[in-house]
Image (cartoon, rainbow, N blue to C red; front, side, top):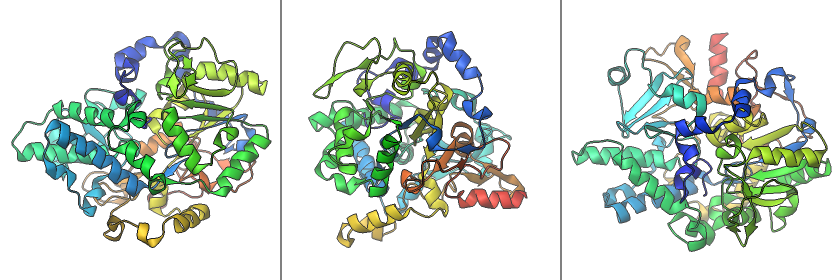
Length: 502
């Protein structure tokens, strides 16, 4: 599948343990449970983090090593989902008509409550900061009517402790499924307009739209709208890596680091992306490539449930491997078997691993919780809040986007999904209640999770590619101000909050 975060819903054969909380808990053996209880490795580490101290450096692919042109990609994803609903499920054609202003609604970190069609933005303690019914704002009175005087979202404990999938809500935490949040809002609006009852039935159609576009065989079969479009014109959607990133990856290899690529994208799509962003010889950069990794299950499941498989012409062998005994390109898999392999490759009983990723649910939470890996989170929202784009990204954009390529949406002011939203505010901080005084500024739940499950946060790998490998980055720490851990600097809203608190 394309989306790491959609892997469980968009597989033709979804893994039930990625979906059902009861099953997930039941399958942990004692070892996994004890790992969950023990403090993260970072609790005992120094206040600085350095790549030179790591033995193994792993990367997610989509929205991590590969940056997408978010406006183009978001429009394509929205259209591919909406077209399916209109053509296959009989939904109103009006879903296909979007104005640039509509995109302000597209905001990472929202949770859609499937029982009532509300979308909510949560504070770190689970209180509802803002909410909409469909795409229409709920007033403070409406929020209190829905969620009580303390504005508590009832499913918060389940989401906050395990990030498990549920039939009652869906957490939008990556750009692959994010346009679905906008589509959900508009579908709920449409059901209202027709006088239909809003319940979770509409979600079954949404899941079918996701599956139609992203399932494992869609790339090969040119099914749906998404893959055929990216295949036709990859440069329209993908940003090539700068020379500094390629040099950076080579320098890690030269320094004796083991390099991993772990993506839930299928092998055929992974190859298309990597050839476009890194070049035809991209395989030489990585010791181990794992596609269709089905994160977060890759980290949370025991090896018997998710063995590694070899690939022949992009088709997985039906027989799972009993262990991973050499570097190479594999499919599916689990981190304990990978851990055994990197112990052999590094010659160390406990190799230090760092993993770069963009999804809290698929990358940061499971890699830090189960793998005890260091994690670097890619947070493009930092660029929407005053953090300058990297030089490489600026020159890259100038080269590959001549004026005629800028679509008409750009000129008419479509908001990038990573920018601050007028309707939803900042990804990091929000004002609680209707007061508006500085004291009521709260960290969002997403921001809190970044500090809890990541070692550090950056807007893109381009931002650190020119630094020496032994550069010391301040790490997130409960004892430090919440601005410590962002490189090259914290987002505006967090700086302002810190100033107001001090």
